[in-house]
Amino acid sequence: MTATEPALDKQLATILKSLAENSRDEDAWRSLYGLMRPYVYSVTYRMLRGSQDLAQDASQEVFYRLVKYCNFESLQQPRIFRSYLMSVSRNTARTFAMNTVRRNATEPRKVMKEPSAVLPPEEADYADQIVASISGTLDAVNQSILRRVIEGYSLGEIAGEFGLTYSATGVRVHRVKQQLFRMLAKSKKTAR
Image 1: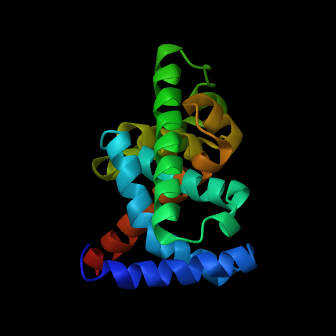
Image 2: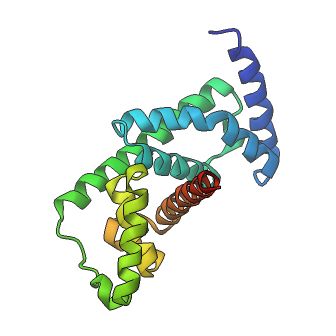
């Protein structure tokens, strides 16, 4: 045990007590997320063999499952809670890994409309330019997601194509947009 673990255990015990008393305590949830997210992410990242996007999605799902199913009254000891959290993280990562394998095994996926059916040709060319300009910072899946967003597909359609949940697709779209905004802000600063 390192010197910081007793302090973390004390902080975690306080958070767990708050959540046992009021499971809707937003400050306690923020504190729990801030304290335990690196732990959850490291477990899911290892289980998903280094896939950052899947690990981030799985980490979000772990906290969703905690909100929905966790009985904090019976998990007051930090050591026991961490064991429970590790089990939830591993099981969530396994589910994500199995869904990925299953999705890859059932190719081809639903065929989406051609971009020209969604966007006029000049706008489709513009979409190609946007995706090409940011392609160095995005993996292939996120490039495809960005392309679908530009083409005007709904989150439900994108989720169906990529075999993701609606909420995981929303998170991915948000991340891709944030990367695009950061890139545009950076290019705007260098243009000055």
